[in-house]
Length: 212
Image (cartoon, rainbow, N blue to C red):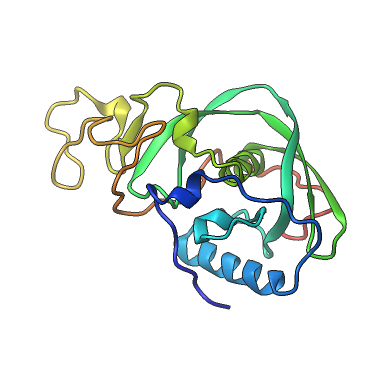
């Protein structure tokens, strides 16, 4: 397996919808193995193909307590239930985190490397990862789902700590939205962050998963 170069905003590939695959092509297993290795090195729990420059509609997900990653071809969310606000970041927009709206529960459908249909019922971290990665494959980033334009901050700054005199992060203070990317923005990122970092409760992933 190899670690693949990551793509960062403002790379236009991140805004281009990925193309559905009509069959599992030769070489896809190698590409997804490399995506999984890249995800591990970057300390993420998910990675979409356009984040490594491919416009094939493919994503990989591996929750912290799974022993194997899940490969999803042509993933789509077919049902959403409820809404909540969660903190989120992205490997392709390093150095920032924001408050976004996500679903409480989702149902998703995809194809596995064996060509068989995978159906998933998810909540918690898995639901958030599924929405995050399918968004990527549709050319949507988490900054497009911020609850408000100013609900994004540099890592090391906590917006709920604003106004606490004398409290510093990384040697200096940051304003929550100062220089931060917003919907349609093209920042020059630095630093690093995990792709998804939601609640600690791990959902029951069901039969398709061998990791949890």
